[in-house]
Length: 336
Image (cartoon, rainbow, N blue to C red):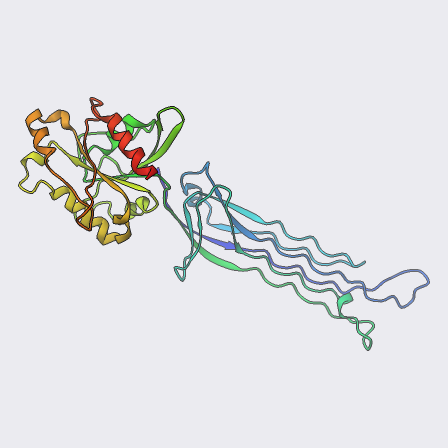
């Protein structure tokens, strides 16, 4: 199950207390101060890890604390610094301040790190307070407290191609045929309850990642159906593929009704989604007659500006018809 949102608390380590100490050596009755500084507290660091695909681990652990710095010691010995804590998150994770909503970091690349809470500085020992007028200071600093934050982690999947369609448009069947992904497939709406990622092998050495999100319905942008929860997962995609059920369209008065519903939902959610290259794909053409297929080929789609034509392909994921053409067109859009 994909867990794409988590709320946790983090705390960096406290700095260690400085030490009050004096030299105690034979034949040195009035040794000077030699109290060491406290150690620095550990940092809290987030790190993107490409081997992770969900935030499920944060369901069971809610508090992450770095180690405190050790207190200073006599003999001018500085206390040991506290160990940092590194929190691994999937690539594509947004790190937010839960209380303010501020985005603190967007971890996209594998290995990318973000210092979320710096450990407290260790306090100075009494050796640091020696002056010409005070040769035997009996004061030391306490360590600085660590930082405590309430964090929200939001995962947005990273894929090259996003499949968009109404419920039961054939998205899951398509991704199961062109990749190794095995989503649940059934002949009823909302079979897909979470996004699926599939790696598509193209020709000999190329590949791209396809994301299949649960079907959208009219009003999805305002939370209807599975709605806004999964629309975020196509924000990072480079190309959008609109899947329209060909078995229904020949009987509709407005042949572009499904497409217009999808466009309106994406536009209402995030207008910039419509700036992405896109393609329209009629699915399930094995269920309509050759004459109806010919009628579908007369339907044209344009970009939002009403100028550039959008590529249109008819496919059958079940029979495999035109899947190679679909992959070729998708690859061309990605590379343009």
